Length: 415
Image (cartoon, rainbow, N blue to C red):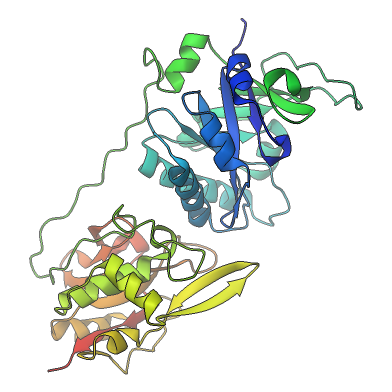
């Protein structure tokens, strides 16, 4: 079979001729991000240059870093550059070693990223890697991995400059647990100028199928590769015995893309607390929402900025609601940390008995370091504790977070 030909590019390709590139490739993958704090400086130009072409954007994954941050960063950067999820595809580049994690933990983190991408785009990402890295670093036992769209590297030893290295014939070497491949990276020193890139060399790839099947995979033509449609979780709409609050999500397009003050971060990435406090203030009768509240925080010094590794973070001052709205007071007895996530229930019941919600700190992903995430606890029923989760904008049972709460904060309205 004459497998359809494609390339993958990044800043290293320099200035590209996209007319020539489109004419000489069937698909192109573009580096977008690395971990959660880096964006390829050429991504926007490369992405825009490939409008109308079969294209995908990839994140070079750092397994030691927060998987949700990395997935959100990739989604955010691609969305801001212009995307149509019917056609454009996302990729996780899995090849970085030295992370110090077990196979089980690497696998868990990859699945977290996969699920987040599926939640937003409607389908799982393509997974790029190679046989021996996968066997050394992951457990390919979950059906989502066994049946994943695998992009596998396997090529000849590179010839010295200025020689070009011929492509390795397909198929690629298959890791244990994987029986089918989607894309084969066949060469790392192909002829760059012949396909419109600015660099001398370029990575080359082959798609496992016909050109019609390739176009179908990218959402064009007859849909042979049916997209994976995300079925939303059932939304709990029974507020019996609970405090009714707004179902606001930090990812709402009305404010999700807004920067948090002068920081690097947007509400969609780090805005769970800001969204939760906005929900709380609205319940107390303050006319605000996450967009307005975030704007007020930025204007009136509501954020404390901390820079780590060149990235500026924004932490909300806890007492700022009382500064912005003098009728609001933060409870003084809410500094208790529950380090094991247990023993918080008595304090929560006390606050709820005064007809006020509870801001609760939960662990976004169980296991390992605490991945801080804030929710708004609205009550307790026979079937457990209930909260509004700003990640989804829905009413959830706290069993989603193992019923563990690590800190409680509350506000009250002065009479």
